[in-house]
Length: 285
Ligand code: KIV
Image (cartoon, rainbow, N blue to C red; front, side, top):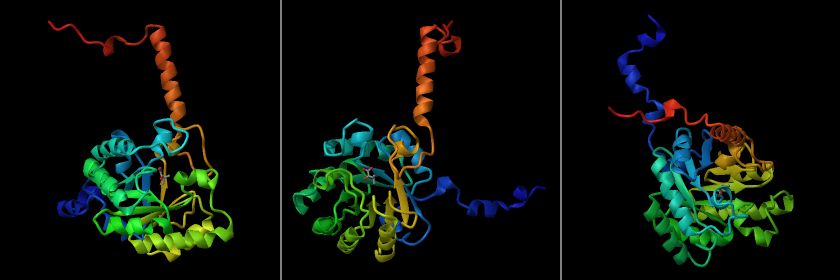
């Protein structure tokens, strides 16, 4: 008898398989601070969400969708309607991961009240569990306002793509003289009640410092393996986008696979080799 078949039925039932994984919650996510690394990816569509949901603790419907899906030059043109439509799609595909929707530029900065109105709309219309917003100390009052009114907030500090015009581009935080200000941003968003914080484009020493100093999980992108978790843009990670920033590791070659498939399809159509007989409907008697 194999070892496998000697495992009693009771033991087999007691061991939960991946499909029995419970949906990640906001408190559950925060409780992972300092524990096993938190696995996060962006998703913008139901099918991709379903794939990522199998392994991810958190799926972010990031405003990077403006560039990745809609071909915009940056994230500034993304609207609340874009975020809601993609948030709904991701919620249809994911049933295990915590789903967080980004607040687009212009939807939350004006006042905590406007931020609440727009964030509540995102939560109501998508069913997502939390929102993310960019900003440090200056956004702490807004984060406090939202979290005290039932809207969990993931903060985002360091390189903030929505601030590209004031920063003069996508500028990583690399000079030690900038570190204290970002550390103060981290303290401010954590004290205001953020359940986690994305740390983007910062030198590894700063990411490590933030991870050690903050009581909430730090989720790094272009930061350091010392963070409590990592996030990447799905399309970057699977090799679908031609630009490969320093912080991206390509785990796949989707662009090449898609180009090859499209080229073969075009060839077979041109030569009338597609559709073959097995792709056609038989006449019913
Ligand atoms: O919009 C996005 O995809 C993001 C991640 C890069 C963290 O904010």
